[in-house]
Length: 419
Image (tube, rainbow, N blue to C red):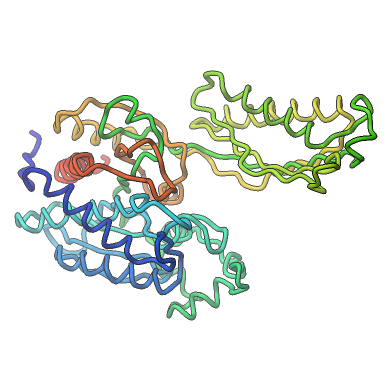
């Protein structure tokens, strides 16, 4: 029989969460915009604020070997395996305030409510604020969750930020020992599951008029760097039929990518997010163009076939136009399926809160992509206004934050470990 969640009444969850979101957003390196980057003074200040909230909720809190904020609420007896909740607390530059912190702050609010009612469960609850999911400073994503999963690549310690500081140096300045990152790793037997609440970062839930959604998978991604080389020439003297215009070729490639991904292809999306034409003069035919391609799908075999088809189309365009092509894969992440047994428990909590169950994939990457190496993962999405994210306009309404918290709390209290 499902346990009854009594919890807080009205919009207290949503209002408290929104207030803490604002308080954390005030910690920024750039006045007037939100920027909180890995291993900076702002990272430290944000961690201290989150740990204070954890301790108010009667959690034992500490910074681990890579700077993740870790809080633990013991179960019916000390030392039990945990249900791990959380998200990240770093940001992109000039960020929105809800991406990441919503999951951390909501999880703490749920634990605080359990503590206020004297509830202890037959498992521990751990809330983790991952130190670096975005990868802004050292161009390596999921650093915090990879450390916990035991898959941190130590070669990343030699990577440099835009000021030439290595990750190793930054960790030492922060007060961490880069030679002991392995101490952050958790054994699979310690973690029953990982569940993350996060803003959707897209417009689907808003279009469906739904406050929350159950995530089915975190889409895999392939990124490519493309360079087309033609012949630069005078804009007034080279006839159109004799040109080898790299920019015109790139434009045709970009349209082909959009048309290929625009049909209903099982969640496939494709983006050209960067383009650079050289020599970049008004009266010169571009002789070289570089651009990026980002292809994502919740199904790995489908994504790989799509990438192959897109590359084939680009090769045909380049050959027909007499251009030269250099194309390389720069990034590849596998699709991470959310565990059906966890999806079912989240869906039951959604229904119990009076909301329709709607399933959708995540096109954005999340810490679950690393955590799946040690445990099953699941996600609950919360509607965000306009589908806007990674932008100062990013916003979640307090009633939606409240519903998200209630669903998560209900799921926690009724959590049944696998098997």
